[in-house]
Length: 138
Image 1 (tube, helix red, strand yellow):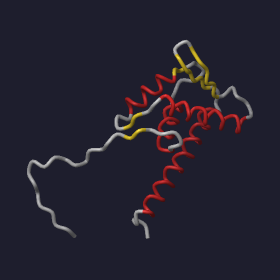
Image 2 (cartoon, rainbow, N blue to C red):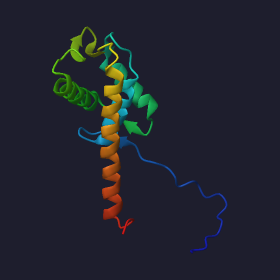
Image 3 (spheres, rainbow, N blue to C red):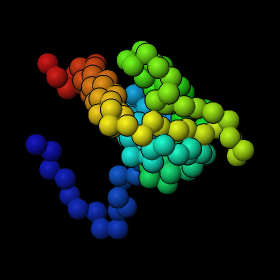
Image 4 (cartoon, rainbow, N blue to C red):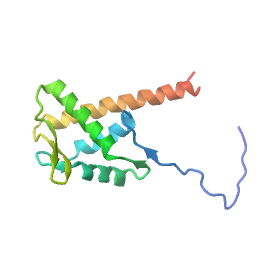
């Protein structure tokens, strides 16, 4: 074990650079879906407000409308594939820009939780692959 000495006045090196959310990144998508799962149901929510909330909640991340809308479009496609209707997740242009309206039904919450769990599994797999590539796991 390497013995280290104290260095009085040394700053904490645990500074983290910001992460720019990118389309297709499961870590960014998980954060978006986590927020959407807690969003109000049955009323339009401005995408701009979702982006602002994400940027406020995750100060070390930077979310753009493009990334958030990409996740919402994927959710809409997944909903359509699972339930064969488009009424569950509605993306529309409102007077102040794009708006999301989630169906106010008992099936919405468990479905969104399942989407988040799927993304969490994708994140975990990506972390495992990284660990293997870096030699942390034999």
